[in-house]
Length: 115
Length: 112
Image 1 (cartoon, each protein chain N blue to C red):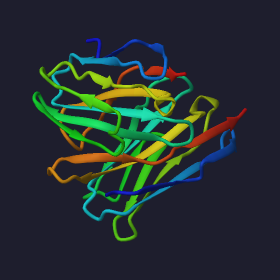
Image 2: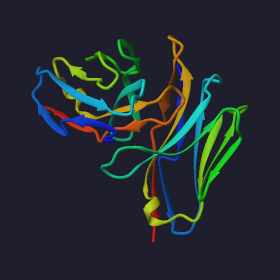
Image 3: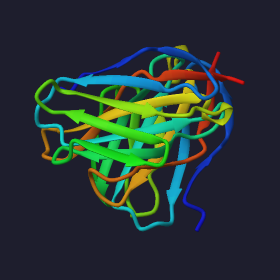
Image 4: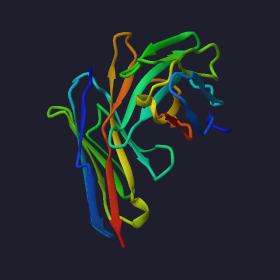
């Protein structure tokens, strides 16, 4: 099955700096790569996603890049703000035995933005 | 729309007891999922369903059972609770595969 590795597990930055979180995946058939943000005590919520036919996607301060050859994708947050502090999860969606595409999540990155 | 709802929010079980975690969605989504979240371990898929009457195992199905008799509801059954099942459980739904998942608020379960 799919294996997703996420690094770093913790990332501490100063307000205004950029933050980059990287994920690798193992199944070359994976075709959808979402990123979720989970604030303390809350539910995960989608912040950005990318499909395998696209190399980069941007939404204001957030961008995601995908390298299918190397099987890795990254989340980039520019001009970080204290409200960006949260745990971020990547996921890769791959086909299961029944044919459905199901996500496998990374272990998460705790981002801390210091004012 | 209420989105994805879960009950209860908190529960303490004794070893060997059973319980059902309830999950419902009002978005007419076909796909529904159950995850458990342990500290530092991300979200592990327990079971998923691609439509009413169709369920399949995820990564960590042992000790759990599910059913999907309607599009809206996807209950998770714990039989013979064990301390290893202490976790936060999230239910999620999506319109179809390869689309955004909407998560419920979670159920924090402690087994002692």
